[in-house]
Length: 189
Image (tube, rainbow, N blue to C red; front, side, top):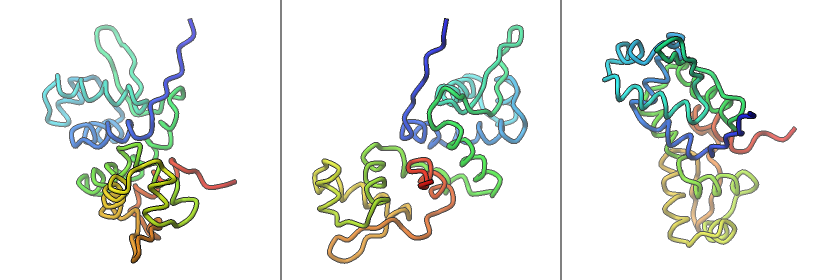
């Protein structure tokens, strides 16, 4: 039987990652090369049930591989090829771990990508600077919703808001956010 292709969305994967416990689990698994649930729980200082739930959630987003070994399940960092965006998201997060980015900053950057409306706004701004009114119309949002999401993106340093409602992508977003922007809209070939 052929395994179905999983297609978790970018925003749902970022939502799974935008959790301190799951981010710590992924960091530990990436750094230590994986292990069983109880081994990972001990390394993270977490309860086994919470660790198990976190590992399953990360695996469901395509960021971990799991292999049954006798009675145990062994997890390791690795992108599931059947999950769209898993490899570049995992690479972006692991690069942030290597840069020793602060977990609080990583969580802040990840939350910029946890809503489909924010992704629509970022994609539209990647094409050209626009006013808030133009963005709202183009993305099918009310002006209030567009302003709320643009405000969140501005606080996370992904969007620059100027006078008269002009909006652009920020010239120098935080590193993890910049990597995730490339996942959202890969550079043209």
